[in-house]
Image (cartoon, rainbow, N blue to C red):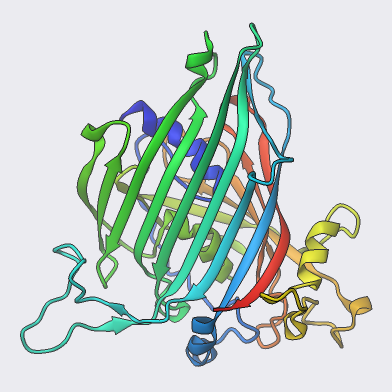
Length: 383
């Protein structure tokens, strides 16, 4: 396996994109169901009735970024967390047009063609993420620095929760300066650069994916590959949203298609019992949840977050609870688990918390610290 793929995991994990190195331990298949936890009522019927709403509205979340100090004595990586260019943003909505399985741009093996009937079309959600990070690597022995300005931009389209959120398409544009080794001997050995685009097309049964890779630094890595899939599958850049659709209790397993590695890997999540947000340490999150704005800066009154078991949505009665969800990949060199924190779904018929992603905790490779993503702003915008 190319060394660049071994290193790529760090920056991808930081952007909520799971991709790990080593040989896969095999896919894990599960009958885990998904529900539309982003709606006030989560049933399949309600989900279908709200397609027009999500075609005209976008949920946009912005996260601040912080980190703990490195424990690596050889070198360190420091994010410029005060820079306006260091942030993580997600955007969720529904495509205005149904996905056309007979579209001319679809590759062979994915496109559905029939001389007798028109190709089917499916409504699809869209989940977009943008991670921008400015920072520097510092070599401990000489204090030499290497500045970087990285970005991971992803788009994933997938079917309804009633259809297991089956991915249909993803596009990932990655420019990263990722840690390279445990012990650096000079400033050049601290990092490895990646500049690549991965475009993935899934067939309608979601048992095959065609990955087109464009490597802007090494053209020999460019090309097309077909990946065989089985069971419940998510695209790796879809994952922060897909977990939002689970009932967050116990353990669950599924498969992740990783375009960067050109394969599918098994994954297992472990969900912790719901706990309350802390009024002091989680003040930024609570403020974001209680002050959802529209595109004009006005408060969206029907998007108030409170405990669905409370007798009223009065501000004094709100008790926002969350689940921590750890995810592990079945592979060698998988590194430490990423932990996602989601608002708890207390009542499926009055789901005012909407299972929003509140925080992400991502340990970096080689003892270089931990990066935290914390919800800072939440908006519901017409489009």
